Image (cartoon, rainbow, N blue to C red; front, side, top):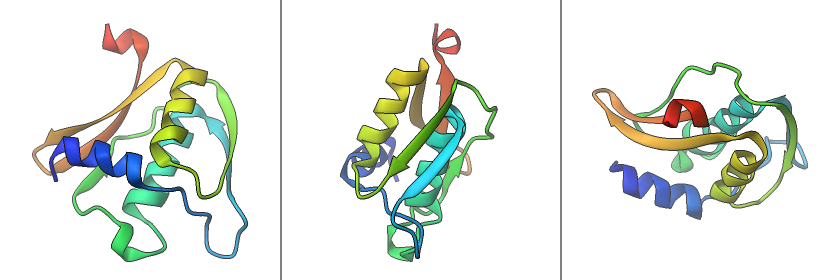
Length: 111
């Protein structure tokens, strides 16, 4: 799936709570939270039809401040962008040999 379509998918996807839970709640470094949200809603969704084939989540380096997020039926892209603003991290999808990768970087890495 092209990167542009994945960016669009993130903007059209809502966050789903884990089965049997009222909301998805996580407290961890901002990078870990971002990758958790993508994993739960694009890679390992409870509804298999929501999963994106060949989407790889880059290894988690635990960057950013510890944040607590409670999400339920919110726009995934909005959640990621809110974490971006709170943490000074950025996120993106990029093409790689094995598929498309979701990556989180620090602003210093971007420069």
